Structure formats: structure tokens, C-alpha cells
Length: 249
View (spheres, rainbow, N blue to C red):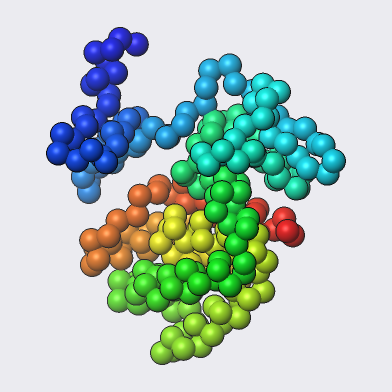
């Protein structure tokens, strides 16, 4: 690809803001609601890279072409569970070291290693409880009253829901609680994490993601706050979260 083609694909850097980071655009599609823009991942899979893992003294080391890989904070990538090691390698071989998007399990692994591993339960709970108060899903009674009543049948004034949420949060380990933070940041909703573990635990994820996407779409009409992820991305985020929570760590 020529330099001129690269220039066309890369959004220009702002001259007035040195902190602005240019982005690569994968595709632009016109829809009834405007332009749908798909961005390239922050770190695409490198040509010739093959990821695998090696078990050493009870620890699974994630490797690229037989060499250790590291997070953006220079932490060596290791996990303590074979299922997680397999899934991490699987996603690395699909997406590369894409660490900002939770449709890849790498986002969960890197965030845990760099930010959550050394935190106490109290330190992890605190931002989740703060995010609870501004969770958009709790404000969908106006935009989607039927779905709201289906998903929060005992909501009432909200006091019981908050108590139930706090009780549920206390059942989680530090490992699981870190995933709630990641998940909540991705979808701007920590209540969604609880619903996945409780009310929706037997749901078909693709269908649930479709319904969730529509509820968010309806909410955006009154809030003007749009969700970036597609239905397919949401389903993968749901799946990764449930996989993480089910590891028993």
C-alpha cells in the first residue's frame, strides 16, 4: 500500500490539540440513522505472529512465536487457568494484542494484570457502586417501559434493586469484580453485569444482545447518548464476561 493511500485512510491530526490521537478507519457505511463508522483495532494482529501458551510451575505463560508478551504497562502476560490460557491464545490469534475492546478476552486479561490484580475487594467495589447511580439502564423506564418491567420486575422505587445489587456484588471474588468494572466501562452499565448473572443467566446471548441493542437505541433517542458497539460486539462482550465469571477464580 502506498504512502498516499495510507494518508487517505488515516484521520488527520488536529493542529490545535497535541493530545489528539489519529485513528484508522476500517469502513464507513451509510444507514438510515447516519454514518456507521468502523475503526481498525488499536493493535492489529501482526503478520507471521503465532500465539500459544506454555505451562511452567503451575502458571500459563502466553507467548508469541515462543517469546513472552507483555501488556502496555510492561507486565508479563500469564494466567493461572488452562481454559483462560486457551481462550486468550485463541483471541490473540484472531485479533492480535487488541487490548482496548472487550469483544476480545485480551481486554479482560490485560486490564486484570495491569489494574485489578493488586486491588482489594473494597477498592474494586467502590467505582462500581458509584457507577450504579448513573447507570443508563435504570433510566429506560420511560423509553422502554415493557422491557424495563421485564428486566426489573421488583424495581419499585429502586431501593430494593440497589440492595440486591450490593448483595450480589459481595458474592463476587476480586477476580470477578474486576470484570464488572471492565464490562461496566464497555457498556456504561454495571446493572447489565448483574442481570447477566441472574435474570438473564439462561438467555440466548445473540437474541439477548439484539434486544439489548434495541433498548439502548430507544434510550439514545431521548438521551442523545449512543452506544458504540454493534449487536454482534455486544454478544461477544456478554460471552467473554460470562466466561470470565464462570472460571471459578
